[in-house]
Image 1 (cartoon, rainbow, N blue to C red):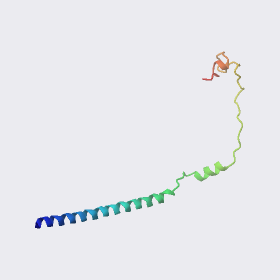
Image 2: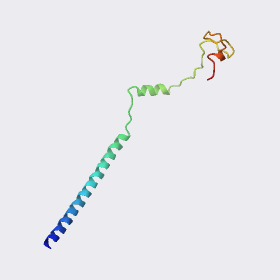
Image 3: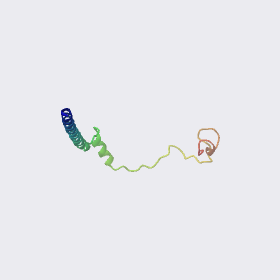
Image 4: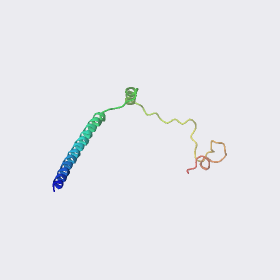
Amino acid sequence: IHRIGINRIYWRVGDAIFARLTIDLAIAAEAEEVAEKKEHAEVENVRYQHAGYDEALENANAEVKDQPFVRPGQKVGRNDPCPCGSGKKYKQCHGKLG
């Protein structure tokens, strides 16, 4: 009978120790999460830039006038001979659509 009482005490002490360890682990995990969130919050506002970022930004803001397209040679019509010299009409040679 005496052993049964001691075993109950051992079980209760063991349960109490286990409960305390579980609580301590939960608190430690929560503290670790909070520290990690703080670390990421500080990094969140970081902006990485290349060395010439400011210069490129200034050049991007400068007004750029649209230049018209200038063809290097005469425009080739669909029924004109192909400029590759095959003797075929442009539309049958290099001007085919697909």
